[in-house]
Image (tube, rainbow, N blue to C red):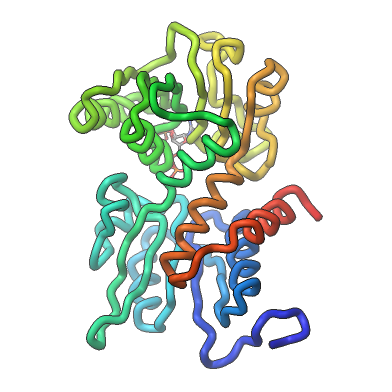
Length: 291
Ligand code: ATR
């Protein structure tokens, strides 16, 4: 052990990493390295800027170099589905991979794809907004990778009404068709609700940059018509969407809880140990809100 309490990096150190583009904003290394140190594991977590055209090479390289696991973020989660040797039920169910476990079997290494985002969404909404999905009415903004996983999870957990809004309407329409086929009890619509709802969930990337417009068209739907607003974005910690929602009296939460819970599940998948949630949360809070 070094004086910092972390075990020294040596020839036995196991490696995990997050791959994405852009990646510089990621709080995942802070969260996972704090967790490894807390459990005295000789593991480290890194971040790599990887372009989509190089994703396959990065995964094959990780297999060759005995990495323990990867997280994937924008824009890799859908692309990776076709690059896995095996898909866990979670990745099949929600059609995206955000966690890879590299497993040695009989001298070869297999890449196994998991989805830990979907469960994390439901957990974060329950913890941070006291929201139960069963029977809820939800307006979901965004139909990219994150939006699609969220829509399927909301439907799977029995929301009563789901309204899908996206700049590219065809993507919202395609998710709507999928939900009608797979979750026929859910009433799914494309476009803004004409009634009061329980939750607005932002799964677009609007809000990451200070000059971004709101992802919500206030001429079509007002903050006064919803109880709560969740933004998957965690940096900045308060997007314009959340500031406006708070001002209108809504319960609000940023994406910290979702990041935490997807990470905690990934940690358990890689290490076989229960994730030290409190330590991971405080590492994230320090990284996102400052010391
Ligand atoms: P992720 O994996 O985070 O979902 P993504 O698949 O690139 O990333 O999706 C980004 C989401 O933000 C999409 O819903 C996208 O809308 P389009 O499907 O029309 O591309 C949305 N988005 C990004 N920039 C936007 C903008 N300037 N205005 C409106 N929506 C935007």
